[in-house]
Amino acid sequence: MRLIIKNSRALSVVAFSFSFAYLLSFLFEGQVLYGLLEHFNIPTNAYILSGIISHLAGLFTCGFFLHTKKAAKGVLCGGLLVSFFVTIPFYFVPTVLWFAGLIFVGYISGCAVAAWGYFLKAFTPTNQRIKTCADVLIYSNLLMIAVNMTAIHLSPFWGLVGAQFCLVIGIIFSLMLPDNVSRNTDCMQKEKTKNVQCSGIKNPLLLLCLFVFVITINSGLMYQVFNPAFAHLTDLVSWYWAVPYIAALAVIRNFPQGANRSKILYVGMAMIMISFISFMLLGRNGYDYLVVDTLMLGACGIFDLFWWSILGEMLEYTENSALVFGVGLSSNVAGVLFGGMIGMAVTSIGLNDAQVAVIALTVVCVTLVMLPPLNRQLSLLLKSHAYLATYDRMAKVHESPPVNQIQTLDPLTLREQDVLKLLLLGKPNREIAKVLSISENTVKTHVRNIFSKYDVQSRAELISLLLKNQFDA
Image (tube, rainbow, N blue to C red; front, top):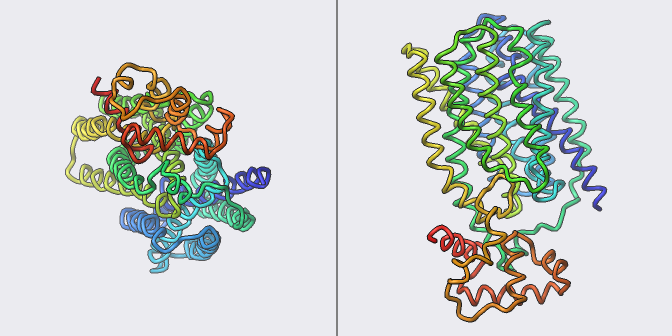
């Protein structure tokens, strides 16, 4: 079974990487659609916005009608196949089929991305999803670079061929994905043991979506302000655009196991700030582009892996993976869309670079205020995720004076203290039993006793109590 899941993980990574490469190169920041529109002298904004809005709708709504992994495979494969045929009219003179096709491709591809959440949950162990998310983002962007260079240096029609080729490979590997293999990560079992309150996912998810929406406003602003300013550097932009993004993903992916990545979020915010300040102060030559793009796209890589992997871990606490994954990623697209609209407004009214930088820095300041409460909420749910700082202290919190000073109904026994330590490390009952060489039923008894002595009903409530006491101290 473990070998099957491991092979299925590789299949899902390949399938999604090629499928997502089509989406990136054709619908979003790739050069295929831009090149085709320019070839026929068509204004780009209406087409690009329609595709992004429909993609947002697909991400957000997919989970409301998709409830099983078998259905998810059908949406993934069927949506990609239909997208292939809907893309064919773009080889010919523009008609109404172009506009209708973009809306359809945007929506169905959004559904396909949300549906992949089921396979991310099924085939990648928890706390390893950061690597799977990094892999698909790295590989899809490498493929996008290849398609971009084809579109720019040969023709946008050859770029379209490359994008459709990626789509075909994605369809083939998606068809190979098993739909009858799953790991024992049943949320209902967690509810029965009261270790996790599955309803507790709502507030962290909403706060995460708000954070993602705000921080990605700068990404949309970047597309409308940075890109036109460096449009004359076609050769450099064609291959270097996503390189810092890929490099940031690779570095974070290969951090040592257990390394805490929380401080990198602040590094990413600093990079965004310096990027806009550099854009304001520097010129528009190749070296200036390297500075601005490296800082901005490196920060994008940091944040994209943050929320993709957080959403991947959240899937452990829901039966509807498409809903959580799709809604979470829709906030990213919504932020890009809103930032793009701000960028269009900035361009139309002729704000100077300094004023644009002020807007961007204001967005960063808002996200800085949001990050600590977001970190606290996510830590209560996800415990030991590598991006979260709060839990870094919780392994030793049972030994600290503030915790010992909490009035319990009855003192903890030595064995209960051992169990509490492992609870705070985010260990499930089965693993606690293995570490302490006791039965799982005995662990459950100790957990119930701990909850009773602290007068709490769940792990989340226990951790919240300990964190509050630690912060108040």
